Length: 89
Image (cartoon, rainbow, N blue to C red; front, side):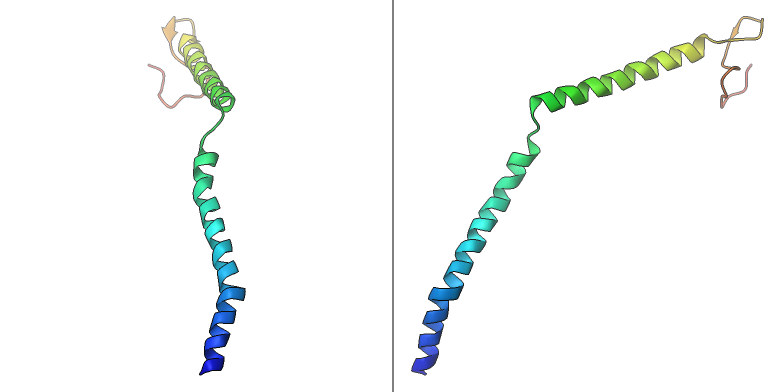
């Protein structure tokens, strides 16, 4: 019985205490990671905003160009030069 108690104390001091300390440090490091990783630098956000704005402006210009196309000589607005889902009227 005494040997078992000595073994328990020795294992606790030599093995489980350092392992528990390591796991606690690792847990605290993991808990801190989302707050540091989620924050994006302002330059990245501005670049992303510029890219999105550029794509939106390009889409608007494309829609305007398509709507400005004229069908034949009738002067009707349409998109015959571009494949379209709706038939010309």
